[in-house]
Length: 364
Image 1: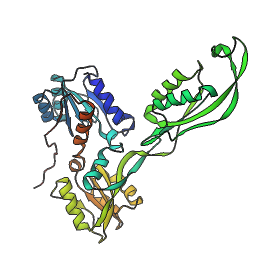
Image 2: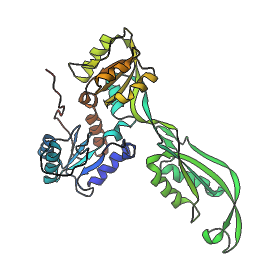
Image 3: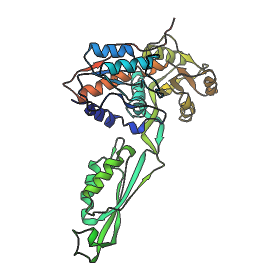
Image 4: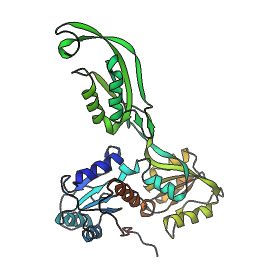
């Protein structure tokens, strides 16, 4: 198996198209054409992770966090990043990072947090905008059904968990055409009228090239007229963070205990107790201060995230309970998610779950 086959499955699951602009996702080290002997799945890729990969005869590491985040101008081994990259290159080990592409997946990082906490009826907290596109084209009415099927097969008409929900055939009209550009209709050089149907169909933005390829291959005209526009709609199946409900409300002290047990941490940094019960909870793995307003707007009783600064806690304003469980702690279940996904896709291949705790923060 070559690395490109692994990449194709990962990017079908969590397209890099939806990663945040600041992020550095995808293949960071290695060639897509190199043969893969085994895959090590980890949260962070460090020197110790490279050693673990070597020990298990894995020459591919699928990591959540990208080891190369900012630009590298030198590889001298001066920093832990440089040393990790050098060791990976020396041992012919590829590194792939998925990060915010998985953060924005409906059943990604934050779904896992909700699952661990026992939250139900989950929804995206910060839906992604401008991630839905619409194709408009005209096709001879007699060819409309075949083209419709080809576009569906390319993934159009499916937004998130909804299938065939965004396709429409709008009326019939007449098209004035020249047979030289469409030799299969009419006689050469003659002008003719052809009954046409307008097709409108929406699709996830990352499928654009695939949808247009299907359009060109299955449309009867040599020169296809079409328009693609990006919609302002928020995509309720893609975005970061999530909210959900407990079956039964719990008191704040009970909630704190539940967080400690779930995330395996002795310390929870939190805002002032409000003396209110907690049933609706918003979550966002990793650094989530930017979404405090989203958690408040969705009427969550509590917001669970990480990396909150001193002044971030003031934003609670006695309306929501803020809990910082730690960056590593909030994302720790992600590698098990990736491991399970790859095991399902490559059933007869060595997929190893890293046993190294890469949390740089210790508690005393």
